[in-house]
Length: 345
Image (cartoon, rainbow, N blue to C red; front, side, top):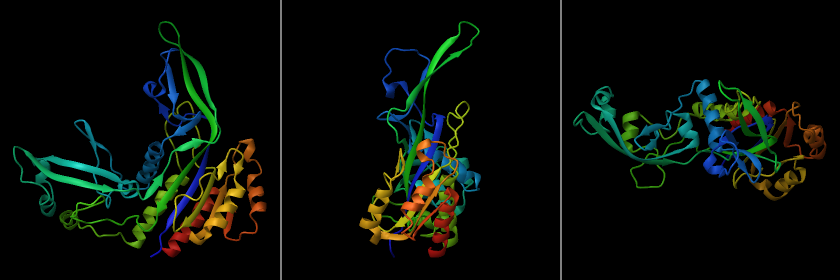
């Protein structure tokens, strides 16, 4: 079976926003007002972490009816459910858990008889089981980072109080924010069942038997998870800091194609000036032997950045010799690739 990796790069246009805040300790604030909030940045460019992006993707999946696990606070530790067959976010984004799970005797008594076999008999009102497992993410992603350097702006404001009015400062940016994603098509919804002391494991044989876990979901269920994962990116809605900085965070540019080898082929293709045409031609020349599918390029007509005006027409003209490059709207790009997956899965 050949490898299948959906390579994705996408751009979110932020006109004046702050998608992910930072802390005083990270920013090493010296002097100035106490009332100041920072935004995440890298080398003077606005930044939103991959965790922030995934958090909002999970909200979409949950809205579409999928079960999404939440982190659990256990003393000073944060633990996960570690049940990727049930929870789509653990299937797609991976997890690591190495601890003991403790439940009450009441919780133990409510379990199915097969599941009870995974736990010790209740003692002093508690029951335990050892959990050591790790799953790598099938949908690998990086954060969103602005393509322009030095676009962080400081915004001044005054908050009226019952006493003296208090000045405050906060950071914002206006930029095209670019991110990357690699979705492992073959390994999505496939589970490792093993007793071995190995680096990655989803379930022990005992767990798989008790929970009725198969090594892979059906093709239909697998496709549905792939589809909702990609739709969660297509309709990305990042909620942070939107009360005063409302931003349409759905991608305005996307490039999608499937390859059998390598990291993300499309890094560096979305720039401050639009799309790197020569970069696309280089990928075709150097790596086409690894390409499984057509390449879909989606460009929204709603982009306001002046450097991106007329971009769709320019790309169509420059790449017209390549019949496997399909150019249209962002929605058509996602539709095109998902149609390909459905036909070939």
